Image (tube, rainbow, N blue to C red; front, side, top):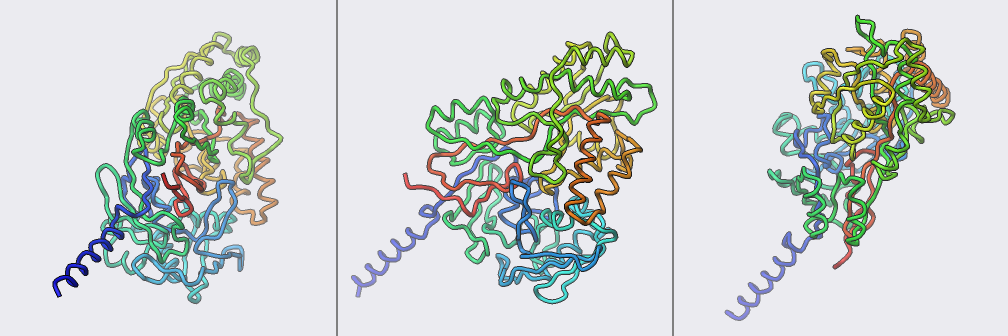
Length: 503
C-alpha cells in the first residue's frame, strides 16, 4: 500500500512539473513604456503594447492599411447613416461570457456616453446609438454620413459587458476581460505576465505565456536582447542595426502609416513670417531630408512627400518630396521680404521615433544655413497633447507633429487638426474647408479617395507643414523567434502567430 502511495505521489510530482509555468513556451518581450492605464479598453495610450492581445475590435487594420474582419465578419450600409455589422459566431470572452451583437452594442454605448468622457470616444465622433437586432446583427447609427465608420470600429475594443458592469471601469482596467488570445494574470512594476486563452477565436498557436519587461533605456534593451534575457525588443534605433546583426540576431523594420512633420502656427494676431506661403515653401526647400534618411536614419524609412503614405486612402502618387534647394529657399525668403532670414521658435518632442532628436537638430542646422535662426525647445508628449488640444502655444512659431494614419488607416484625423474647424485651430485656410468637409461625408470609396488626393495636393500648395519623414519602427529578435508580425501600430505585435524554435 505504501509503495503504491509513493508511486502515486511521484507520478503526481512529475505531472505537476510538466504542467508548471516553467515548462510553458514563454515569449519574453522588452517594451519601452508601461501600460499607464493598465488594460483600460477605452484609453487612448498604446496600453504598453498588450491591449490588442487582450481585446478584439469589430474590425482590424493590416499594416498595409487594408481593413480586415475582426469580431465582425462583414459590414454594409443600410442607409447613409445606418451601418450593419454581421458578428462572428461562437466567440466567448476569457471569463466565459458570450460575445455577440449585444456585447458590442454595450461597448459602443458605454464609450459614447457623454457622462463618461472616455478618451477613445474622440476617435468615433458622430455615433448616435448602437443596438443588437439579433445575436449576430449589430446596428450602428450615426448623426451624419460617415464613410470611415468601419475603420473607426478598428479602434474600439470590446470588453466583457457583465464583468464591466460588476467591476466598474477602474477595477476592470486592472482585471481586463476580452476575447483576445491572452489575458493578464499579473501587473508587475517591472513588467506584466499574460497567459494564453484556449477559448479565444484567434488563440495562440504556439506561445503559452508572454512576459514583458519595461526597459526605457535603449542601450539596456539591446543588452537584454543580446544576453538572451528577452526574445523581442521594441524601439531599436538605426545605430543598433550593425551591433544586432554582428551578434547573429535579427531586426525587423516596419513602416508605420504616419508622417513626421513640423507644423506651422499661422492662426495668430501678429504679422508672423509663417503667414506667408512663400516662407512656408522656403523651409521645405531648405532642409536636406535625403541626408536625414540616409545618414541619421540609415535608410530605415523614406522622405515624406505629403501628409500620408503609400497604401493609405488619399495618398497622391503625383506629389514628390521637396528637393533640397537652399538657393531657392533663400530666393523665396527674399521675395517674401526676409532676405536676412528671421528668428523661429520651434517646440519638439523627442523619443517618439528612432533618432528623432537628432533629426530636429539637423532641421535647425539646415534652416540656419538659409538665415532662419531656430530656437529649439523640447517638450514631453503629454505637454504636446495638452497644447494641441487647448491651443496653448505661448508664442511658439512651429512644433513637431505626427500626421497619423495609424489605427484608422486614413489621414482624416490629421486633416481635421489642420482645418479651421479644429477645436483649437493653429492653421486655417478657409478656402480649403469645402474640400475637407467633402472628405468627411462622401460614402463612395473611389470618389472619396480622389477628394483626399486633391486635398493632399492643396495642402502642399498652401504649404501647410514642413514634411520630414515617414514613420518606421525597428524591432530586435532572437534567432529563436519565428513568424513575427505586427498589425498596423508601433507595438501592435501579432502574438498569436509567433513561435519559438528549440535551443
